[in-house]
Length: 435
Image (cartoon, rainbow, N blue to C red):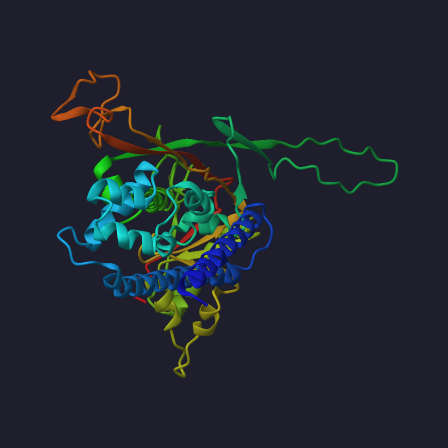
């Protein structure tokens, strides 16, 4: 099997696995049981296949380089790999064949044209698609694309309730209050049956807007050694994932343009009360964890508890030993669970803490990112742009015309929101840095 055939086969396998991952993530978002180990194995397999493709493409380039001198004649206008790179990217940007571009740039009798004619078919396997199918595969779902890198979508996949804002600015979720209730009463024969009433509460989940624009010159687009548009979109997703996690796993109060952190109790208008471990050992951890779970279950919650912590805290717990020198929790944590609860580890989690979150009581509206590309807009070249001010000047940052300066801009907009349905759905176990 040729290297080109192996590359195509590996790429096809990646697409199929991504499709399977998307189906599993959708099932999880709809509340179906999805094995976390299966998701992790599938994600790891995709990463391994991508590394394999990269390795095969490098090998293919080496073979092409070794073959190239056989087609190059000694003349003044000789072939060079720098010229070949210019030809490849200019052809992609202008929608022409590489042979046509090589002829226009270096002449029909040049060595570059001869080599381009010879290797053009093999070279196509190493040039990524321009935005088209690649973008649909990578960014079809925000939840899927962020799963390997962000903590919030992983929590949502553990049984969180998925919301869709669609054309709505907010979603109102009604729920049944525990008091007053409609419980039956003991009565004697012939006695009057009591008539009771109940009550309902509501939780409002408001969408909040995330947006960013980045700009590059057309020369960067044409001559970059990477697929620049795809690279920038991927960078936007990764960096936005960090912003989402920082906001979600904080104790910040709600703002006009951002939701409250999950560690903020909107019912009490204060940060979630921590359960501090009294001692930096297994007994202190267990006592604090027991208190946290009792608080949760005492409020009739705990249907789908999930443990969230940092890799450092998880490792410290794994290394806790009993009096006989045996590791107490190592085997269970190695299987991805702690005290029977699934575990998510991420450096986005609060430092030195362990969170117990009833995922079934958290509502998530993570949305889908909307990307737009333009080369005709006028932009304030400022990471803190003014609104409603004189657009001809913003301090020292001038307004730039993309059309006049031959640049292009990529914009990402997404509408997201989240909220616990009731107080007590998020519990904190703190003072674990010294374990």
